[in-house]
View 1 (cartoon, rainbow, N blue to C red):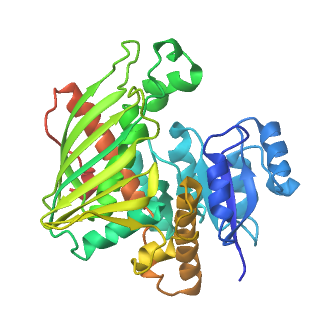
View 2: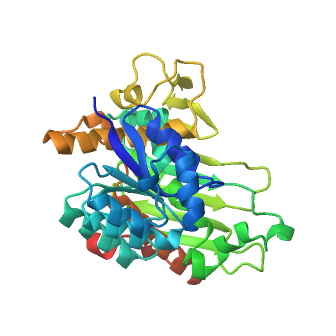
Length: 385
């Protein structure tokens, strides 16, 4: 099998997210790291790319150079990952889509709803894949949870409770650290800080596992550190289009919490619970029965879970492998596109540009609802109303 060619923008030396993408993209030998513009400093980016094994003529100094260099090649990259600062996502993603490249963009996909709608239209017009890296949906047991809910194992879903809380920005003495400060600066982060950074992962997870979209929401947001313009804690109530009630808490000042992404789903005949810090167990409580612990890798799981499991039961699978499942889905989608065939349904789970757009609309609604003392607002982007 010929490997697909993969390129990356951003994710340079010292990046938090770059190594996870490079590990994830290469894990299944579906992609070959072929091109990159890894740093906003041209020479450093070129040098680092070559140290990672890129050819000198495909280790670029800027994303503009990479676009110009790749679009004229017969062996151009099949997928471009955009892992740059948030405010640059829209411009780069749109440029590569218009030039005929498939794109995986880090979240948030854009800084405004209008930009998000433009990306959705651009991807559709170009006939190209635009995915958004809600990478935690790649976990095997998250996919099994989705499959269980879809086949009715817990009956009609009544309530979903999800959260993403950590305490890594709780130290007031660290508030002026540039690596922290930008996240709460509207000029760099947009209208929201903690919800846009972490809360949208929790909200997207709720939609992913239930198969429902958020219609409206009410938010209570606060800056617990008064020097911050944007929120560092948010509580959001929401309603979904299938009738499910939603509760979401996200925080960056919750001392004692580390990563803190988790979800509980309660239906008419059962409940499910999963946490990202213990990703190899899914807790299932059927109505009137004993609690069951479903282990990743055990027999008789769903096709979606089986496809996204690589390591035998009892051995941990972590975040880079969840990212790898997103890349594995995208490889199947790209190959199906090239071969003019339907893709494997168990792989058709990667987050789309439409998901990135819905998240941006929710970010704006949370910020506005918080300003209006929790007023219920429409959380849908205008093009989906």
